[in-house]
Length: 219
Length: 300
Image 1 (cartoon, each protein chain N blue to C red):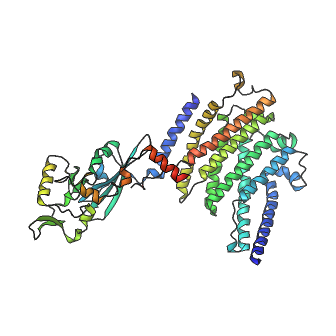
Image 2 (spheres, chains in turn cyan, blue; image 1 turned 45 degrees about the horizontal axis):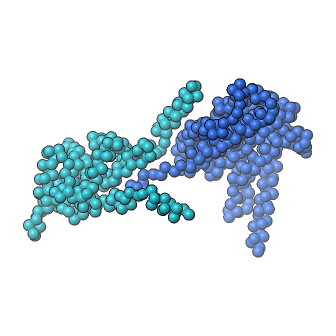
Image 3 (cartoon, each protein chain N blue to C red; image 1 turned 30 degrees about the vertical axis):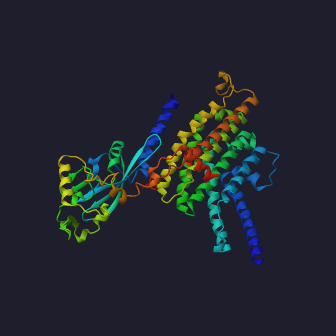
């Protein structure tokens, strides 16, 4: 009994020490759910686009998410966070969408196409009409790289897109674009964030194939 | 040809220099063991006192193990490399003998070298001392290699190693059925094999904890501490497992310490325990050091 007690104390001490002292425990912030975004992302006019998600561990999984954080007046950066199982699972279908947007005092936690925060904001751009009479959103010169950062590719939002997005927001529903262009099944997301959709990550490997490959590599 | 011959001459010169350093060590040994002056400074008669021979020559093996970690960089000049060897060799001798002195003071706090080795010719004492000499040498070698020619780091790591070894030798009473002090007085060989296995095993584990890449001394020390605690968690699992896999036949009354009466039985039990400790420790180093969990970054 005495030995079991000592052994338990030893295990607790190890876990406590590892948690407190191990360098691997530092540096990666924890995001419990969407409400924790403001603690991590401080800048104004900021948006966080979920660009990748990953789980490690055998029996007890640890979930990580990778965000592209675009702050209106700062640089674009990539942020890796550790997150809860619920939040990670919930957002598997929201890859390529902005999960957080902060504009002045307003914080938006609804999954929306990236860049929704800047649409209609005269500080960042304006609605323009081209020669064919089509109206689209154009970022001003200072933010000319934003379509690239936001993963829009050749896509440019029009006023219909903007109105539809606002109506979805008022209904408190996520929005994936008029023809589901954004999200894991969306073409724009798949083109802009190819790392997540890499073939080797998507395919399910059978045990037989895995063993054959192992023997080929090692013997 | 001239170049090859020159290199051979350098090697012979360095071998002679190493012998000179070992000769210096012989006298340094006397500083820490003044009672051996008579044996060390005169010609040694191995058959007169085998226990003393084992005790003395275990130190020689130890210092050879440590010297093997020092490198000669001939490209920086023969004299500079000799000087480097002399400096680090002297440091190694001092640290090694100091470590042995401290650890033996902890383990043999009830015993005296003169009484046990010179008067009683206690082979059990000599064998345990032999194991200490090898283990401490191996650990000092590991620490010297990790220090990478930095004296400050060497001192920090050496002290750290000494603390861990000091605690580890006390761990023996928790995991062995043999009573150390009583059996050592009885010159029991079972004890020396059991304790020998334990100390060599502990040496493997501690050396493996120190053997890792380091960029920052604080982070390195934390990693060593964590690995040591982890080893303390894993080792009993192997020990229990090995006992279950290889059960021994001993009557219930004989399981208790002091019940192992005949010489053969006790010797067998010493081998058994010692083997369990060594194999358990080696398997522990595998679990603690050889599992690569990878990182998330290749995926991200």
